[in-house]
Amino acid sequence: MNEYQLWTTMNLGLMANAVYQAGVFFLLWVAFRAANQMRAEDASVLNKSLVSLFSLGIIFNGLTVGAILFSLLEGTAYGFEQVESLSAGAQNFVDVYGTGEPNGAQNIFTANPINTGWWAVVTIMLFGRIWTKN
Image 1 (cartoon, rainbow, N blue to C red):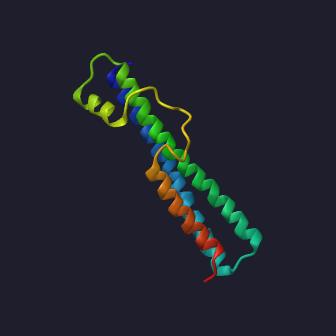
Image 2: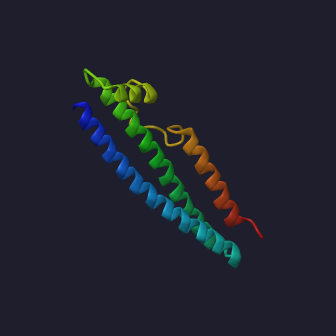
Image 3: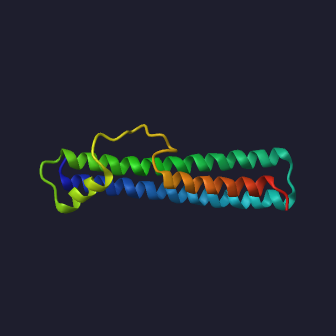
């Protein structure tokens, strides 16, 4: 592959990742609506458990999207390393995202610590809303 093909492939991956992330954020909004409803109705344990499982699925997907994004960026940097001559922008990209073969099977919790922290806060907010009293 040449540099142009790598940039194009990365951009297509970024667009797909953004669409999936938008879907995750929509489902996250649904989860917060459901959590508010559980609190307002003083719902049963079964309903709270179902909303909790739904929320955990969304959180898992959000962590996965973040790990895929990081893998995409690392994979592109690795691809740039294989090209003989790079532009200054591509070389800067390699410098930022590292060198070496990408780890395709990254742990979703360690791929991007900022993403993990953000989803931890979301988890606390959701479960606090579902399981605490007014």
